[in-house]
Image 1 (cartoon, rainbow, N blue to C red):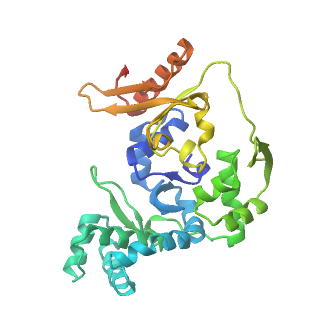
Image 2 (image 1 turned 30 degrees about the vertical axis):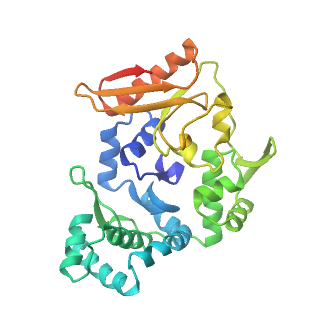
Image 3 (image 1 turned 90 degrees about the vertical axis):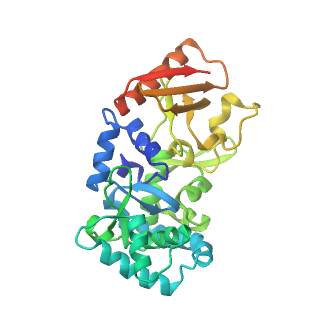
Length: 331
């Protein structure tokens, strides 16, 4: 599923695991965790200055295509926190020594090694920006988790070797994947998601085999084999933070058809959302519970009996993914 989507935004790690679980029948949180620890899924910076899950087979060409743009977006942070060429060169040597021969280190452990080598990491942002730069340069990537802590691994020891296609081929490939899995979408939606310039996004769209639609006043594209599917019964989903269903678009107004005119909290279309038949109808939140999973559901408009039943099924699906009993409170 990660390969099909190409990249899944993953700075909120538990939410990103649920984003996969939503799209894979029978997959559990423990199963996604196992795949991550085994290196079948890599978590690193790509597309935009944030973490994404990526299939390791796609990582080399994605970094070659989008890494320079992310570097440019991080340039101010590099300057502000002193990650200059000298510190980067010395820091990379220390990190590579720490990780060589299949060793995995947490960020804190790497910070201690850098300090021991005479490189001040008193400001945690300096270490964070150094590690981002190393990820973008394909020096390091995610290793297996150690309990609840993340570790780093050497990129060349974790990611299989493979040829990187030409830049034009990579542009076409990225556009093809995006519009097939997220279309219909606009050129600016694709530019936002991919981190590419609008000019490169336009070039990618021209090179890919796509179908063009006009929806309202917007020119959109979709994959040539993708067609909308309708169902008589309502379909409800509890979408996690930064889910690709909404974070993959710059313009998210299509989600708001049923709540048009309602005053909504800021950043409504960034976090845990209840959607019914593709439309935003409320928010959900998970609370700690000694008995399993406690979910608070907050619809922002009345739901029909059939829709309430569909939302209850969506909550049960989350419980099955977590392999825990679910208690639901509707506010």
